Image (cartoon, rainbow, N blue to C red; front, side, top):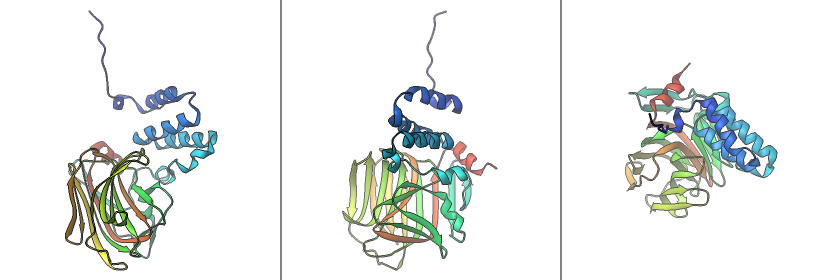
Length: 277
């Protein structure tokens, strides 16, 4: 009979063959090739191979050192969450944090520096003068995500960031609460380094520095909503990106989170990995 070609998704390729294939593709491309290799291995959650690629990148060209992510926390504990995690059905992950244990900070891996994150006095303390951001253990959420927190803003110039469907390539969404430019609360879509679009902005209500404020970020199949207290401050649709990391971040000082819950839809296989012994 006649020969026929068949195409299979890259996800069908076994992990070790996938690594060997990428190494062959980027062979001879030096530090740039190693840098391009890294995020593709991160997407596959091949953490050790990704770290090796980034180490080789920096070894060949130290100028890349400020651009590569810190994967050490994920490497030290690849799957299990330090927060209280449970599954809802086959494709929903629900995690709560009371920050009674300092180890809960380990669930958040640096994505954008500079910044510091730590559990102190039963609170998660996020500090960054510029714009620091952390992902929830590199977990990919799909379509639906909700973050609910009680936050204390250090000053009137301190901002809190929630990110969704964010990727290493700096593509995804950021909701900024108490931002300076634009002032107030806004939703942004990032389409790569130095490429962002402000989708919405609203000045009210004003955040009271030092006070406990309940804040909520929701996205369901492309519909974004943000609440401060019970007041809805953002409601708009944008479905350009629908899979990626959940982020927490801050700029302009320190934000303390007293309570935090994260719920979202994820691939059942990825959820199973997180609960595997």
